[in-house]
Image (cartoon, rainbow, N blue to C red; front, side):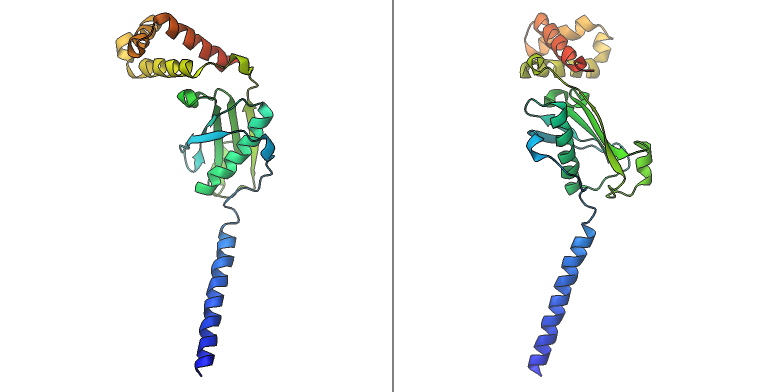
Length: 208
């Protein structure tokens, strides 16, 4: 009798475990998009933030930590799409690539959208986590990396942008005043500010 009870309990536990395993597999089928990635072309990167644009459509801000071609960025975008899906299900992505965190919002290296054929708006008709209708739309920039600004120039540019945005009432769009305020903030010359901003702006336009 005890053996029969033991067998019943063991059988019940086995069934529960199997249900849990099968259920977990079934629920995770759409958790990560089925994308072929050429891992040899994926460059070193960091996803520094993934703000939601609206209704499970996200904008990962990705910083590339080494020189990258358009082809390498394409493969990196595929890996980013898989990485984001591990944390949150989404309807679409707008992946923004930059080479320094200081101007990550600007998409210095371009953007890649992972969205339905109809575009960003049509993503609202898709259930979060259903990636079967999504495809990649690349708008990437081929850069001459010899012209890449330095880390310091990126930091100067970031400070200038902050002052222009946050302290607009004090300069009223006067670009010279913006540069002077940036120079005072960083204890550097106005000329250094001017050169740094020009370098970053030229880099921003390169390849467009």
